[in-house]
Length: 82
Image (cartoon, rainbow, N blue to C red; front, side, top):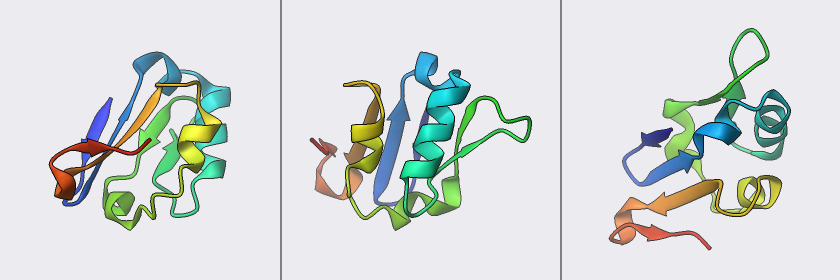
């Protein structure tokens, strides 16, 4: 799954997005609420209107398995936050 804002794009591996426990972890980790769970408490959702609020804190990268979440800086020729 991928969602693009004006400045930031976020990609999440589909297996991670379907994992309710990991979706809850990502939703809790993000200080600007880019991640949420579906209303039934299941799959991950990316909150489109919050994407460009990203402060590049890396908390989502730390909360997910390596490579499962990518934060892409669209303003920096698609550089990936590492």
